[in-house]
Length: 301
Image (tube, rainbow, N blue to C red):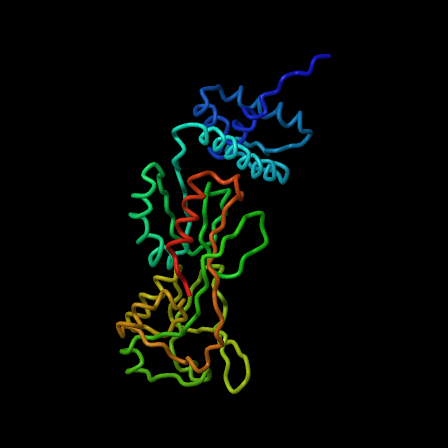
């Protein structure tokens, strides 16, 4: 019996497009097909693989565990095919839509100031930037690169370290003039300690005093959803906050903020990584160009 020809790259592209666009109808419009044709194609793919890739509902598609693994590898394979074609064509410059998710302090102090230069270097890349200190799922948000601070969870994502920053407790001079300067962790009970309410925020302020390690739980009259809002309240003289040193560097240099309890600072740092799917030759050119650009331009710590 003659082997039935299977257009595996075509099947893979339709499957990935269905996931990326959130449904068969959208994938059909983008591919010049009918929704029923797309649905049948994905069903044939599942039959051939002997695995369910998608849970279907009237509102959305949801990847199964097998579907998630197949999608991740499929994205890499399609990127590899695209680069193979670009390598032998005149159109081998990075191009296309690039969605970047970054925490707010990194976005304001590093990413946004670099956008004009990146755009000049890669005019055919369309940047889509989301700034949030809430950890977002790269797959659900269709994100190419996420910049995250703090400890990383185990995942299938690849991490590229951009640097690390020391954490410091700071306050505005006007606040310290009114409420006094703390000299020991125990003094903090008499101060307004501002904090963040996003899930990745550290729950306490580590301190070292009299040879002992301890953690101070911040208690104040305000919590905020991102690091720059926390910095803003501190600049306004509302209380003390624990910020990344890079975030407060200009304020410290100008005297708008003052570092306190440095003798009690344990010297802990927060690492900053770029997270993405795929690695090496499997990265789309636009993603690789962006990661290399950040690594060359960003200096933290």
